Image (cartoon, rainbow, N blue to C red; front, side):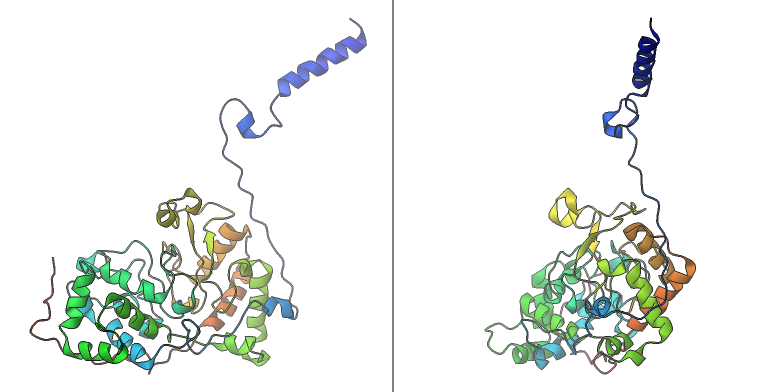
Length: 368
């Protein structure tokens, strides 16, 4: 055999031995390997002045959230406020809306999962009701479009307020003379004012006024002195690492869906998110992007309450969503800015009203 023939034979043998090494895992024989997860990258953020385009995606909060471009009538708001605080709208008459959404504490109860009827725990961490009316959808899975639609769900949820059906809600309301009068005042043109849709309109009307303006609103309105240089650098860091991809707009989030674990699989895969609503696998692990308004005050974080500290939540979001590994000083800078989103609560607006008195026909508590 000539030298040339020997060289060719050796090359062929080498190709055979290496066959498949440069093919994707699905094309090779043997064990099917899991896809490689990219390692998080690092980003260096250098202090500089904020640019106008970096601020263009943010707007100050309104005084109240309109519906069909109109503010709700005052009688709706007043009625909704009373309904929000009334525990008689629960089966055992011991849980009102404010049980899980404490308005004196930024609309949260601070628990990983709220306790409902007979101490049962909900399936997800309860989000704040402050500014919720400005969200593009309600609940973590977005199953309701507005706060008016959302209002009835917890009342009927067997784990929460546990009313057996809509008629049971109507029966309670019609048994209380002052509610009969107040619904008539709020909905004077309706032949039967006390209905579930009107209940939702009233509660939603009240929630549309749960607005918490902060120093950030002054800053985006043009007052550069509203934020310190350190806070402005925190926003610059937030921006440069890529957070505004999901968190922008008036509410710094709250208006789109996103897959949780876009860059790295989220550790807790039990909750399927939107998939349970759409029955489509494309919704697996897809959730509403949380608003960052008042985020300093609304822990624990995420639908599964898996972070109890804001610093940890920021670190995890960068790693799992953006594929970015933040340094401790970068996390601290972002948290410094996030605290400027903590707003003022209108204490007069949320003041608990005196509840109307029951009548002899008002149903009694049912602990079963």
